[in-house]
Length: 351
Image (tube, rainbow, N blue to C red):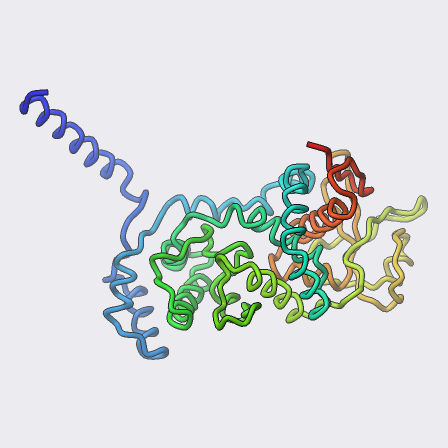
């Protein structure tokens, strides 16, 4: 290729790049340090937490606001999918088999965690399976990009994500992390357990006593921290999570609340004609949920531990999926790679 042709091609490529930036200016852009809200954020970190202003400004200047993050947060699956579609994402033979393999690899640690905390292995494994497919999918966004995008360019929840950005700076200082190296989800959640920075700082623990809290690659720390999260939110050992329910033939459908805290009791639901099995006392908190199943409505009753799960992710769909996945994986561990039925439409087929 002669020099003239090469030059022409280079000019064409450069022109195309410039035109692309002009046509799609908001695809990604650096955070503007001259914005009043950004300057206030820097000032708060300096004054309240004694950060070097040059360090904060350099980190923010290197971060990017991305449209892909804004698009992702505007349509989370928990809000846009019916239950049967959401459940189908996680309750697959492939994921259940992967979970059984994962469980066997970490069985000694899981057993010790359950003994120490009362949080069952099924629940810890179910969370890791839903959050990151047992560590396979932990996110590819730089966490600082996610939190600057949402903290400064997503007005509906900017205060929350700006607080998480502060927590990220504090976490990096405490754990000696390089900010630009931390990868996670579009919402800034990190590692196989997908802890946001505030949860990392508050609930992560050093599971193996090596002096570090590593939720990226240390499975002892990861599994112990998930259990610690549940214990800190008052998980009740050996107590039920949820029960499938039906409405009695003469019952009028009671008010259904798919909210995030139980407003009824076992006795009040039973008195209203809701049929479900539990050994809990009548005064135990409970709530009827109505979900969109593949063949019509599904009724579930959530107990105290169900709502502990919703503290990890504030969605009843998430909580039920994590619980069911953990049960299915536990059954696969017990029975091996054979076709089994859990009574919930869950199949663990032989590969």
